[in-house]
Image (cartoon, rainbow, N blue to C red; front, side, top):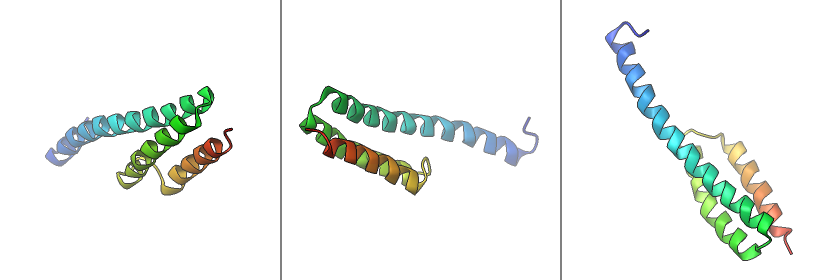
Length: 87
């Protein structure tokens, strides 16, 4: 339990920050899921459009500290190669 005023404030801030990060992470996962769904449906044009929309969201997650830069790059690379390999 937080005891000092500073630790109480940090506890309040971490609760708010956790909510913001959770919403951000959820939005990123939704975009990635849309790309996955488009890939499994076999529609290359939709998959490319979804990939274009997912890219800035994922990179925004990097700048906000949700993901490491290389993790985001790896995810984007794998998705892009799967979209490119579609017929």
